[in-house]
Length: 584
Image 1 (tube, rainbow, N blue to C red):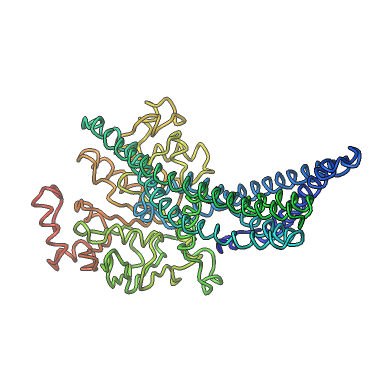
Image 2: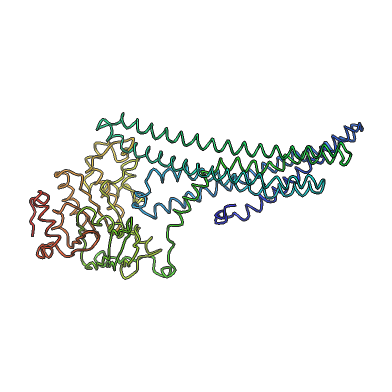
């Protein structure tokens, strides 16, 4: 029995109801065997047919009652599994969004999509089958064994001794099946991840004329999944054969013993028939458990993965519960931010950020973040957004430590604009409303004009036209304008920009730059970029080097120091990066 079941809401009442139905089912099975054996015995002894009528009628009642209880059990299990699966899916989505984009990138979007869709459905199947089968094995099997003991002790001993042997084979084969199911689930996730990435990169593959070659790769991955599936099915069929074979042998042992004692006159026909009818039913619960175990094993593996993701989302700390819900001041200039000895661990014992301490001046609204590739710019933005929790140190906003419920509130105050904004396969209006779904039509049209998307709206014949997959494909500059429109419409006071113009040509970047500098004046903006010509427009600059804060200050101050920032700027000028801008 999986201990994790008891973490599910309402599981105790559900298991109690299933136990009652299982006991009633066992009683009905005993009634079937008892009344049918009595009717057959009466007919065998040439008794009048009317004497066998009552036992036959009671047998039919027991038969109908048994299948009614089975139907109720399935209905109850299905309803509970369906309701619980939806709750788990919501918890999983909340946990994934709570972990943030860095977690999705690390885990792989294809894997997470598979887990949310197929994984939860398989967990529902696992929950629906496993709990009822386990309770049946505990209740029905014990009840039938006690009844057989009452009828014939020798047959009861045979049944009691053969069951552990059957369970032992079931466990041994179960380990092999679980190992194969683990490989199967990993292969399924790899195939899903590969397929999702292939769909996203299909246009690029076609542009590079590599789509046909890539189809062979997809075929190879699919073939690996097919081989893994057949290997898993082979183990499952072997397990089912073993269970059927040994249960058949056990029933045969009971039948031989009953026959010998019946011939010798040591046992009555009615008792022998009743025991013989009960014996196959005695092994039915474990056979069904074994069959459904293989059918739902991948659901158990998915359940383990879901639990690890949901439980890894840290709960709000108790000391934060008494803090006010809103940690922001009314004016952006009054927002104070401080990082104290921040550390963010990477892989293999490395650190993405090491002992970073920053106290931002209160009156600055445009902060630049620069550094070489891998210096920690994106990690710092993730930390500032509240989606990355530090492994050491503290992050303070308005003298409130960023933790628990405060972190949740902070995320609702931040708009994040990545290098490649995601456009949903919906209308332009719905895409702009991403942060503010209740925004009015007038507000949407206002930000569309502000970010220069009016010409696109005219081409689309209205802002309700579909964009993204299955709709109008937008250029990089247009996608960035949509992302800016989202941030503007949200009225969120803090905007994080992660290389927003890295993939744009010079003319498009210049247009966006003039527009962004104008419309972002009313927000507190953090910009991480390699394009150093933005830095003279920044009021404060953070310079990162290999995860450390190398320097901080204004553009003029850093140029006078002639340190890391100065070298980056000179290098950028040499490459023509900052051509047309003053270097100091």
